[in-house]
Image (cartoon, rainbow, N blue to C red; front, top):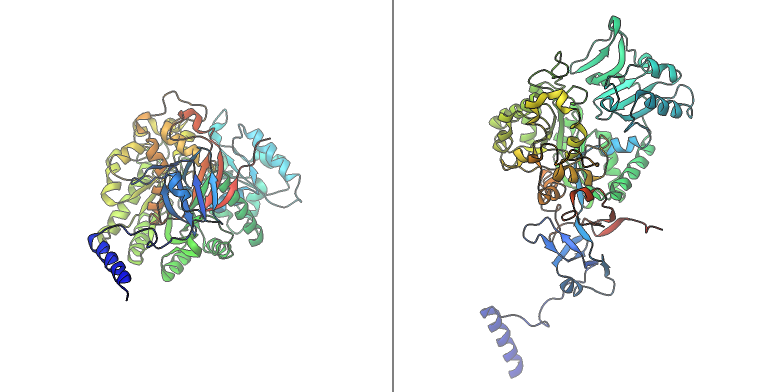
Length: 566
């Protein structure tokens, strides 16, 4: 070894020993980035660096977050550099409670959202029936009798007279009640002699004759009667629904209840490379499906981070709009009922116990204060028997909670998974159902947040519209799209904008055991993000719903780009 080379080795060793910097020539060269986004206002949802103006992506993951000057140094000859012109970038939005297959099926059904009268509903259904062969089923979804002048439940007679030759089944907006015509009742053999099933109710008229409205578990009377949609058509509809989600900035969804055959189809699409969503599939409450998945074990980040199957969806009660939500006291506007428990409390506890032993999460639908208490009690008993830290059990909706139960979420480690848009949809009539005292525990985001829990946000689509910014706006304003009411509905329960952003990004990730992979623009996580034409963190609340998605990206790949306006 020459004198000069010995000196070089000595200098290198001395620099390393003393902690001195290596020269540029001695640093290992990192591969160039695949994508660099610059000239942006990036809200990262990462407390370590909440705001930046650029980031870089390599192999589908965030490789750098910082300044545009720094990010540009990572460019290579094949790097795509996107200058967003100062626009806002946020992590990909995730709907923490929705129904993916429900949205897909809605694309083929009669759209009844927003119908303002029973006559309008009948007109839409009759128009669809006229295009179909006699005897074929007509399906629809979205009606809400609370939006009609009289607010009364419909009865089938007018519908049956207008559409006599087609069985008709029309789901209420929340999916917890259906309206059927005479032909559908004949097909399902529903008569005055048909008994109300456990956890369900048939509305009846004179001589006990069903009126055509089936609530909660009574809907199961139609099982096996309605012809199923083919697998190929369902696959196409799922891809169409995915495109709709991308259009509004969703990069992930927690599918709140899927059967085994549907989960198999999700995996088939993902395996084929056609699923550009982070899909957290909750297994529907079916004994055979639960036994199958418990035997397989929890699975996460399948197909390059596209599918997770590690949670069970249970049901405690029905919905408030159809008076199926289980209340501790009778409904203020119908004192003869206090709602329905659609599952025995012992069943919820039994599944929770088995889940704790097998590493699965349990997410239970609960809307009324009695429904929420039943689930909290069942979870507590299960956790007493099989104690486990960081189980992340969830209650889906958690809409009406007795004041004494609010602290129990944090105490038990239970996550309230709530949908802010439900508040702005229900506020016009919720007081009639509940009375003023119970409203204090309704949609109580701030009361829950103050105990230390997080609230993953969602829409429950197709119950509500797919656009996640509706829930963001509701969370920060507690107002509808017309800025009603002035000052917000019970405004002390609002979220801050920072909380609202996390409720649609980082908190859904945490509530699905994904926070190390998703939820924020942090180095090492999947590069899922959305470019917006307005800064939702700074514009006036009334402008939030005017915000448009410019582009949506999953794993650093563009999955939607808005066409330029002519």
